[in-house]
Amino acid sequence: MDGQSGTRTIVAHKVYRAVLRLYPTGFRGRFGQEMSDVFEQAFAERLRRGFGPALGVLVQEILDAPGCIAREHIAERSPGDAAGIAGGYAAGYAGPLAASHPRLWSSLVSALAFGVGFFLLGVTDVLRETYGNGELERLGLSGILCAGGFGGLGLGLIMDARKKGLFVLWGAVGFLFAQVFINCLYEGIFPNAMSTPAMSLQDLLIAFLYPLGMGCVFGLIIGAASLRGKCMLPFMVSGGLALMAGFFTNRLSAALMQSYLLPAPAGGIPSPEGGWLLLYILVPYLLEGVLLGALLGPAARRSTFAST
Image 1 (cartoon, rainbow, N blue to C red):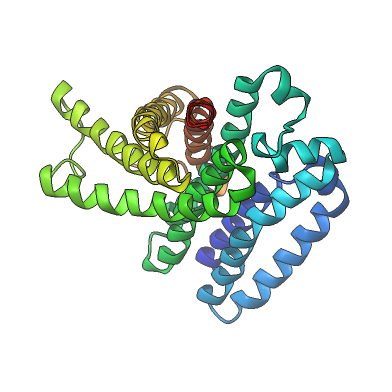
Image 2: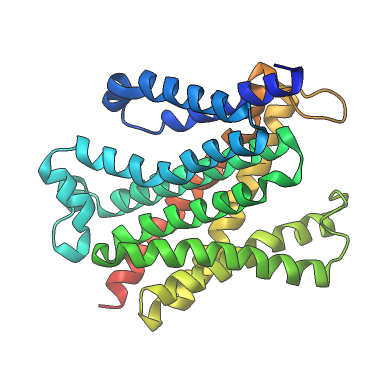
């Protein structure tokens, strides 16, 4: 195995182990080692045929992970708690926490969903930063769909659990559309903003217009998914402000880590062999997703009851 293949194998194993950590503790204790061994064996076998087939194994695992993780978390709960998560407010029962602290419950459900989705988005960015080639376009697309799909799932469980599948679909497609649309619009208005660092207050404000616009479009689409006209405008405003706050948290945490915790070499990022790349990229994404979900959850609850 040459040096490049060895690095790719190390990163792939670390990414897969990071995904395994999203499963419940009990499930990981029973099956985690076996799943890791099976993945490593399958990856090694495909790697003999080239990096493309080996990468396909990792991509397939990441695409399968969201549904499996959600199913195992629900299965590990008691029937009453599972009914609370699956039924939500629409079913008339949302568990003891939702009954006593509905705002907190909404924040936790949405923060967990968006946190998982943005964590997986960060995983795809780890791979893209590591390999830096065109073979990861499909994986990058799956990361965007996971972020939006998981976010839609969390909001769907709050707003109308019976339509959670619809919210997953609209969330995934909406997040992708929002990114593509705002990216084209942003580059058309500010052609050099993406390639130049923010050197002034005006540049900084322009940089924050991107997540603001993307959040507004995503919120508008999620509001439309609820099939309630009154939800669209509040969700558009909440989505824009929440994603802008999440973006600020992402950039701030990355800057603090680079300055104080994980200093990067001059002009570069931490080396993947040391495992720092995972932490350096995943933590800001995780914090961004958790904050985004924590802000949008109560907004989804307010919109639901305001429209009834």
